[in-house]
Image (tube, rainbow, N blue to C red):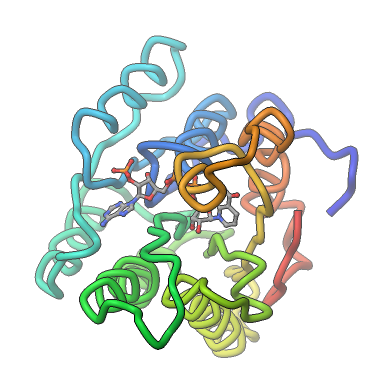
Length: 246
Ligand code: NDP
């Protein structure tokens, strides 16, 4: 990814972009930036009030009106994912970008004392949701001339680290899903599949993981947005099946 790349004003014009975890942190920031560059964003999250704030901010700026989709990924059923896929099919001609960004940290603890229910909740939110969304939204992405599936991963999804438990394992699984899907779509040049490791970025999750850290010493989500937009844009046609670090 070129270090100095900046999107054109209407880089994503006309694109339909679904972002999970659009209510806060990186997802929220990328969603607003996508709208700013002309995309219709489908904001997916579990908290209606927080999502509505992102919706209002986009509308107030005069960007294309987004859509909101309330779904709790920790409890969503197969039926819920199929209903979402039908709604996307009916409301939109195609889906151009699927950004699988929602996640929870779960519990920072040794494996030997990890709470089974937190393990399950973390895997369901961070991994299972990604599988179901790919599984059921792929037909809509295949209709796009320039489809993109992007996963937000993590450093601990590439090298395990003590006490990161289910979160680390979930991110390894996300990388596995990314690579498997990318390999299956290798010959379908209209779809590109990649993962991004954003590294330390100001957010609620980061503060939960590193409570003693001064957020001013790490980057803001705004600094990440050119990388996300690049990988959503036509310029990233040559990048496929890659684990990309900020
Ligand atoms: P945030 O906690 O701010 O964002 C997480 C998002 O996921 C929120 O919108 C949250 O919704 C949503 N979410 C969590 N659980 C569910 C659920 N059950 N159903 C629907 N949505 C849910 O943290 P970040 O912005 O930092 O995290 C974004 C991504 O970046 C994650 O995948 C994270 O693992 C990754 N990451 C972040 C790093 C960092 O330093 N910040 C470093 C490496 C990776 P709600 O607002 O309701 O809580």
